[in-house]
Amino acid sequence: MRATCGEGCGSGAKVIDRITPAGGGPEVELRNSTRCSAAWARIQKANSSWRFKIQIRGGATYAADASPSYAAYTQMVGSSNAYRASVEIYDGQGGSWSCTGQH
Image (tube, rainbow, N blue to C red; front, side, top):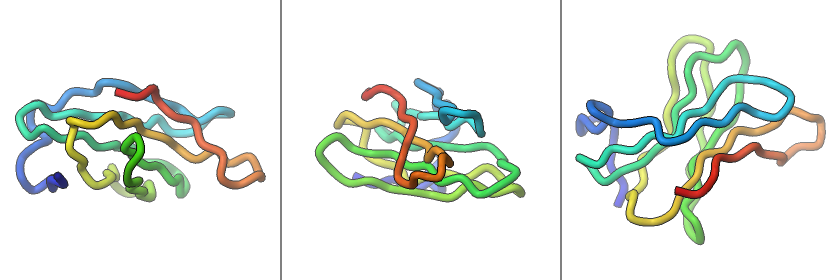
């Protein structure tokens, strides 16, 4: 299941976990809406481009880019599977991520 923010799932959604990249950077929220049976990751305005994602355990990954002008969101995923949010670490190595636990 993939829901969209236009369905009103943000109303009443709860932050169930947070992660800040190792070495510092913007906080990524892992959000869940029981009303919509959906989960997604959100990053508030960031002063530079940060990549973040939501991953379904054993399934798809949906990435998004932060913006200095507005909050950014990943696609929504069905919350019946385990999932986590991650934010890319800018350490010069590429491909390193800080992640929440699985929920």
